[in-house]
Length: 515
Image 1: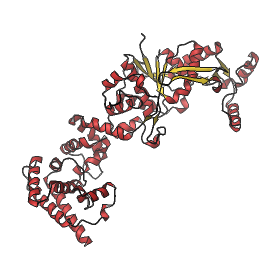
Image 2 (image 1 turned 45 degrees about the horizontal axis):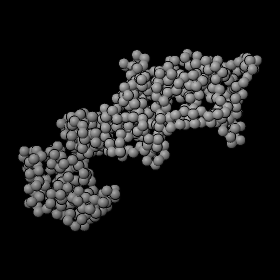
Image 3 (image 1 turned 180 degrees about the vertical axis):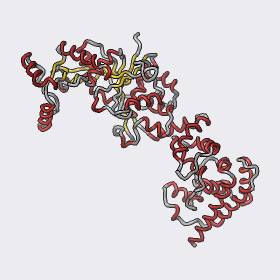
Image 4 (image 1 turned 135 degrees about the vertical axis):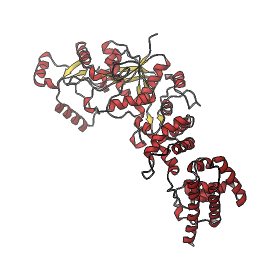
C-alpha cells in the first residue's frame, strides 16, 4: 500500500481563519492517523492579492496548534513550506505540454475585450464566461494575434463542449458537472504565473499527494482539476471536501460572528489544546458522546468516514466552555505563568506596577477555576490589586441571597437607583462588626479567618450565607468571587477590614441621604 500524503495549501492573502486552519487540521490528522506524510505549500501565484506577513501568520497558527509538517525546502526551521512562486518554470512547461496535447490553447484577448464580453453578457442576463474566440484560430490568425497582442497572451484550458465531468468525493459521494457550464478557464497568465487550477494540479502530482482534504468552497474547482488530471493522463487524488462552518445564525462564518482569525483566539487567551480539540469537532466526531480529546486521542480516532457532509456550527460558548475545562485541568504553576501577561497588560492603568509577584500568583490560582479564557483574568482579579472597589450598596443584598435583588443585578438594572431594604441598619452593624473582627484575627490565614467569622455568625444570630455574602461584596465589589476566606487572606488584614468598614459607612450614608 502506498504511503498516505496530504497537504495544506493556503494562499497568503490574509490572516488564517478558522475554516482554513480546520482544513489543515483534518489533513494533518488523516496523515498522522494513517502513518502518512503531511506537507505545507504556500500558493502565492496571485501576487496582486498577496498580503505581506500573511505567510508567517499562517505558519504561526500551525505552530501554535502543534500541527507540524514533515517535509519541504530546508528554510525557516527544520523544513520550510513549499512556495509556488519559486517553481514558476515547471508551471510554464506544464501549460505548454497541455497545448501540445491539444487540451489547451493560447488566448490573445485584451482585458478591454474581456470586459466588454462580460458587460454584454450581464446586460443580457446570461452567465458570464469567455466566448472561446481564440480556441480554434488558424496558424495565420495565431501569428497575427501574436504580433499584435502577444503581451496579453494567456493559456486557456480547452474545456469539453459536451458531456459531464464526474469525480468521487469520500464525503459527498459521486459529484457530476455539465461541461457546458464551465468556460475555457485560464491556466497560465500573461505574467508567466499559473492560476490556482494549474498550479494546484501540477504540485499535487509532483508532491505525490494521495488525498486532497479542503473546504467545501473549493468544490466548484474540483471538476476543472479533474479535467486537467485527465488531460495529462494522471490519476487524480482522493477528494474530501469538508462541510461549511456556520455561525450561530446559520450563515457562513464571517467577521460579523466575532474574531475568526485563529491568531485572534490565541491572543484572546484560548489554549492551543482546547482550540485543536474544538476545531476537530467542526464536522467530525469520534462518537455521539465524546467531546474532550487529547492530541493523541484525536489522531488515534480520526477517520474520513466520520466527517459529516452537513454544515458544522461554530459555537463560541462551547469553545469557551471547553477552554475553561482545559484551564481547570492545568497545573496551577503553568496557569500562573500563562495568566501573568494578561494581568500585567490588562489591569487598569492606575494599579501600581510592577505587580506584586506573590499577590499576582495568589490571585491567578484563586481564579483559575473561574476563567474561561485568559483575557478574562484582569476582570476576575482586579479587586486583588486596587482598593478602589466601588459598587451600589444594594448589591450587598444580592450577595446575601436576596432573590429579587439578584434578579435585578443579573438583568443589569441600575442598582444605584434601587432603595435600600428596610434592614440596612442591621447589615451596617454586621459589616462594622465584621471589620472589627477582621482587624484582630491572628495569625492571618484562611483557617483563622474562617474560624473567627463563623463564630461571628453565631454572635450576630444570622446565617453564614448572609454575613459571608455581605463581606464578599464589601471586599471584592461582586457577588461571585473565589472562596471568601482565602480571598481575604490574599487581600490582607488591613485592606479587608478597611473595605468592609467602608461598605458599612456607604450603607449608612446612603440611608441617611435617602431618609
